[in-house]
Image 1 (cartoon, rainbow, N blue to C red):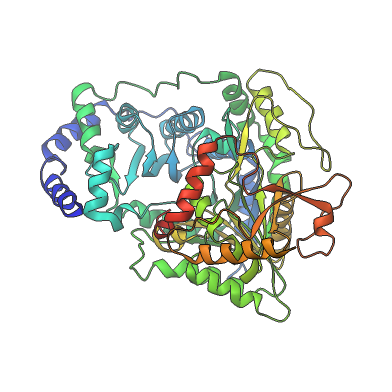
Image 2 (image 1 turned 135 degrees about the vertical axis):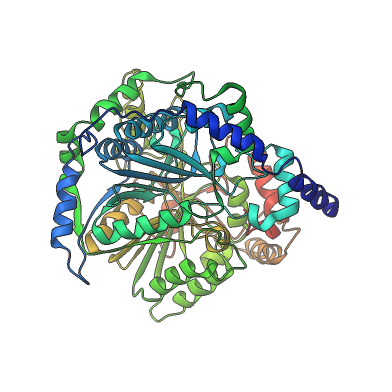
Length: 600
């Protein structure tokens, strides 16, 4: 069957799914006719708004010396802050804006940022956007409109399937059969770079749930804003490498976009989403242009640091290339230099074999390294199939690797702040009280769920790594990743404090072994060990570890504390999972899906 699919894919690739060059020439001609070239501004600064970050850029440039760079850094923990600063920097751009992302949704935030980028292009700023094809913009009409937006605006898609912007299910199946190693490699980088000097990178894509704007499910994520001459050059070089790569395809080299262009043209500006919430759009736009607000809330709080290294895999990375090991090797070197503690946060707790060997090496030191991991529970994750692999290896992670694991709750106690903010900006008014640390977590009556998406490592409270890498096999071998390694105690302390907030009892369950009291418990433990070692048929239902909730009146304890079981109560392997099928599917993947570990 696979041979048939591969043959069909090759036939399609050589015929109807190849680039229609005549259609592309006609589309190019139409874009050339319809795309505006007039500018809204005739000033040298392209009518950029005043920004307090301009002064910080000059300060960093003036203070930097060879071998002693100066950078300024803001950690962006709140989604709304991350969106506001993006809009502010776009409006403050004087020459160039480069954007790179894994997801670009056609929702409120996706539409808003595109509108701002096109407005910048009309001022005279050169704007380039590069998005991975797999999850970016579902409407071909949007792509046609973007192709004709302005002469200063260009949008490209990375690693397209059969020369299409939107590939259907059959297209994807055939491309997997034909060229799996290429399809499996995605551009997971996230970057907004303005004037080649100031950038934002981290975990966030362009979709409402990354900016606390979704009504049902939002992400707890992290970005970092970094400015300075050395980091600016590193970000510029990386983006240019991706932009010029053959995998980055202009819209007029995609057949479905070209058919739309030739048939009806660009048809004007992007229409707003049908369910757009104008009050929060207006509020965001007003604050983004308020230099005083941006100065007080962000620029005045920027941390001055020295060494801030931008890391990025090169385009075209895959498991068989030498490039695949470069970033992973860099992370491994940092971890081997750790002395006392590693704090890690990742939405998907699945380690490659090399990572497991390294973590075991760190555990066998004398004294062993303290390794803490903040990750998602099954109830909080939007990827149960990945959680299933983590669930299979939980005993190994806790016992052999010595990790202290905390799983994020779907309704964390401090999420009430996010809910109140959402209602206020949506014009619905603030509802409910804000839960405080130590109180019973507030349950959201309107059902807003939160999932962890931040990806960070803090080493000895002196080095922080913030980026797109999930520290999993996909990030090691297949996806291209990006972010910053910042060698600064103040930044490391700040990231560590946020991770420690996320593992507080109101926000996360503690994962610990079940007590081994009595012969039945010991038999269950032995059977779970045998079952987890099987590549398939890992069906034993009673696992080594489970989730624990802190009892009222108790202080938080580590699982190895003698008093742990007096102060914690088991809440089961999958607490607060409200969809029974999610639990069933998870157990099926745990039992039979280990071969998919690298792909997932």
